[in-house]
Length: 248
Image 1 (tube, rainbow, N blue to C red):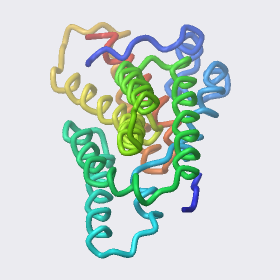
Image 2 (tube, one colour):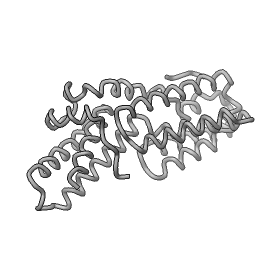
Image 3 (cartoon, rainbow, N blue to C red):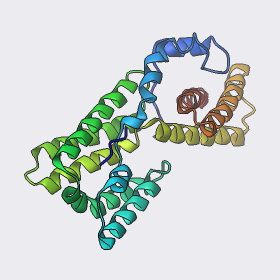
Image 4 (cartoon, helix red, strand yellow):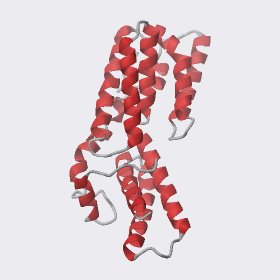
């Protein structure tokens, strides 16, 4: 097999917040990024996380029934990983249930060892990101992934070991930069739209200016997503959310 590489989000780090407050609308200028340099390097390493789709596509299978099963699992995984939505985890879990028993047979122990190392490495990378950003949904998924990895270590059958590693990968999908960026951009866009819809006349000049900055940042975050710059999208959307929630 080929090995390829709630409402409150919590406060951004104090140093970053200070930098953002003094650098104008766009929180991607060098002075604002001083405390974000390590996080940027971390989130650009997302390709290190193995996925069920990668494993399925590389599986050495010739039986047409097995291939059909794996293809269905691949489709479920892709659909469940496309963006943040409530059905995503269930779709990925269904993919794991479909493909797990076959992959336990088709993939060698040596290959699983490599996949497990890569899963552990990404977990550490994602935890590094949380040294700079407080995102409870990511923290939750990391904790769940850790539990599955521990269950894999304690499992008495090869199938159970594989099953729990795959479930850990499923949780970790929601810690990757693309997924986090999509979730934050969607949230920023919704919050800005709600604030605009409220059209409150009692906002003071400072609050009105904050909402206008948030609106521009949410737009820029969406553009960064379109350009494939997940790091910039995360920064802009995160700051937009902080601004909107600060005047609610």
